[in-house]
Each structure stands twice: as structure tokens, then as C-alpha cells.
Length: 171
Image 1: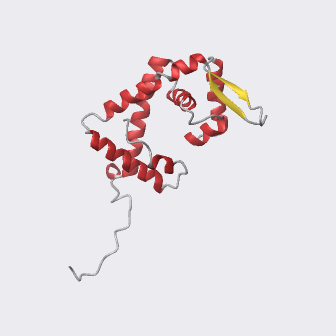
Image 2: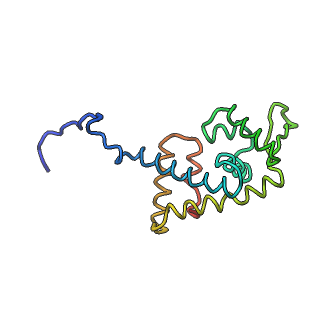
Image 3: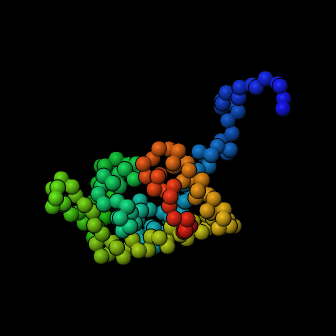
């Protein structure tokens, strides 16, 4: 063991910050790449945007039921969600249903066509992830998911507790 005094780490500056080594930058680039790849598929295969496909998927699996749920899940403002819902409703892919218990609450429901389209979304997500995770072993994929869950848990995100105990299956 060394008796040398410990020195404080150097201050991070523009001169010594290496962007390509930043975990935040790398996560952001992976997300952007994944988002763009999914958008290419949803646009060409379904004729809708990635965001629209994701909303329909969230409704189909019961993760979201209202515009407010969607806004919270995606971190976007309610007016943007309203515009997205308007477009999906206009195409006959979802409908708005006023709650009988509380008339202020408007639930969203997929139409038959919307459900049929939402059924195709997991295959798109999986094909993109399969491409991005080419060469990763199942153990490495599991390790990556666990690390990402830990990051979310550290964020104090209320839904992170659910993710921390999530099923280890799937890509």
C-alpha cells in the first residue's frame, strides 16, 4: 500500500473530455441509431412513424391507457401527444372512450385495424435489436439489460422498480 497522498481528480474541461468515451454519449447514440432503424421499418412496413407505432404498442400491451400516460412514458408534452392521437384516430387505428366513472378521463383504445397493426410492432423491434446485438451472446444481452435496469433504478424513476425485477427473457 502506498503512503503517497491522494490527489483530487482533474477538473473536466473541453480540453480533456473525450466524447467518444462518454457513457451518456454512447447511450444517446445507440438510442438514436435504434430509433432511426425502427422508424425506417415502421414507415415502410406499416406506413406510420416510430412514435405512432410505439404508442399503439403501449396501448396494446396495457402499459398506457390515456394521453397523460403516454406523455409521462415518453417525456413529451400533452399537446404533442394529442396531435399524435388525432392522427391515429383519423386513420381509424384508435378511438377515444370517455370514462363512465370519471367523465374527465378519456381512455384510448385500439380499433381492430389498430390492434392488427400493433401486432406487427414487436417483430420490428426484435429485428432491429437482433441486428444491433449481432455477435452478443445471450449472457452478454442479459448483462446489458441488467446494467440498463440498474441505471434506471439509480434515476429514481418510479417505473424502474418494476424493471429491476423484470423477466430476463426477450431481447
